[in-house]
Amino acid sequence: MGEHTVSTEHITGQSQTFRKSLLADVTALERMIETGRIETGVRRIGAEQEMFLLDHAMRPAPVAVDVLKNANDCRLTTEIGKRSGNPT
Image (cartoon, rainbow, N blue to C red):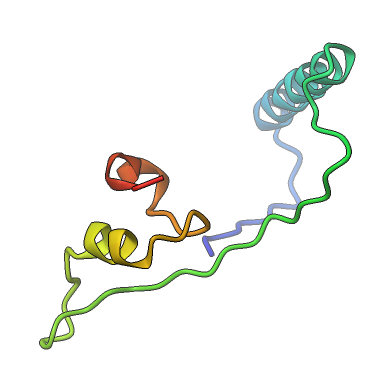
């Protein structure tokens, strides 16, 4: 799921950049709360199950859009960057 590099050395520039980003995120969250932009009354979890579609040679098969159309299930979707083929 990625690469995590941890440094125990204090790096001023990186720390300042991190703090600024963190404060910007907190400010955005405060605005969302104040303006009622956070959904209430519905509980959700962030979960996904990935599926890789392969051809007979075990290479990626470009058939995701067809699979979605045949499944006809609004809970299924392609990756965000390929939403144009999503039947929902």
